[in-house]
Image 1 (tube, rainbow, N blue to C red):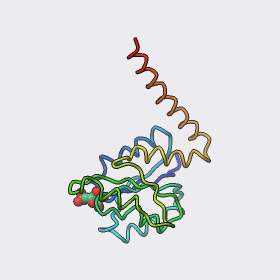
Image 2 (image 1 turned 90 degrees about the horizontal axis):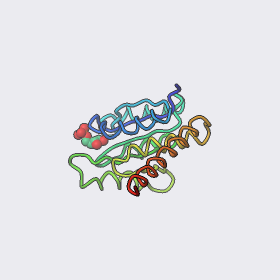
Image 3 (image 1 turned 60 degrees about the vertical axis):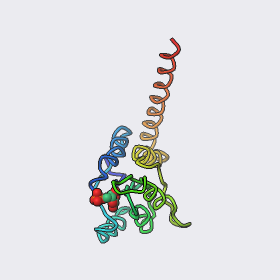
Length: 162
Ligand code: RP5
């Protein structure tokens, strides 16, 4: 399977959340790579990652970080690939608002598609949707995924009604 999505995070401590993006991509049949890239602690690694992403065949980057979360915006500034930002509620956070606002409030010109706090699962699904807009097989996997969600709701409604 081709690797089409790059999942990066500011610290290994973000992995419990960011692995939900990986799980969603696996379920939807999208190849991904996953690693740690810190904007603050490994800035050169971040620059290399962002600058080489398109040439390495990536189509979408999912970047998760907590606190003063510069990683998604900085990566977006260096690549024309779509970047999805996952604000992470880190241990010393101001209730997660620090991460949300640093990723969400990008100035005009450098967008980061920001999901909910700790919303890595949706980041995986959104990345698959972007790829699925051009790839019929992944598009079909997404349609089937949504059918499964629908069936679960109908099933629970029927359980309550009987
Ligand atoms: C951010 O700082 C990381 O993304 C993480 O959410 C937060 C805390 O990192 P650690 O101190 O746990 O490595 O850069």
